[in-house]
Image 1 (spheres, rainbow, N blue to C red):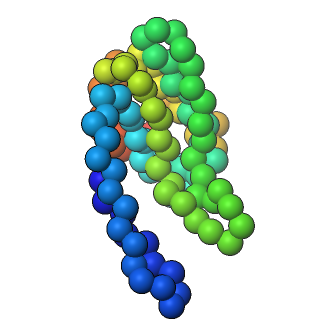
Image 2 (image 1 turned 180 degrees about the horizontal axis):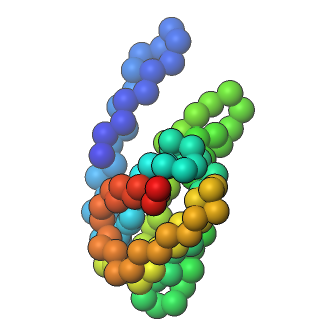
Length: 112
């Protein structure tokens, strides 16, 4: 992974991540139908095959006067799949996906 940053009146900086990563991940992109277009405010519950749980929510704000990626990211460690992913949309709709493959950006549309 490469990252370039710039600062006013400073030279650009290049950061390289050369770590060999053996871990897995899942990124969820939400598209609202009844809720808002970006699914902001949706709450996600992820159940791994080990039974461990992770919770996250869709937001685009994490700091003062800034914005961040609206996709929801989960680190899965050595798990190659997710047993269950539950999405509670702002509209109140609950959507459940089972046996989701890791290492992908998963686009989920809210049921109309």
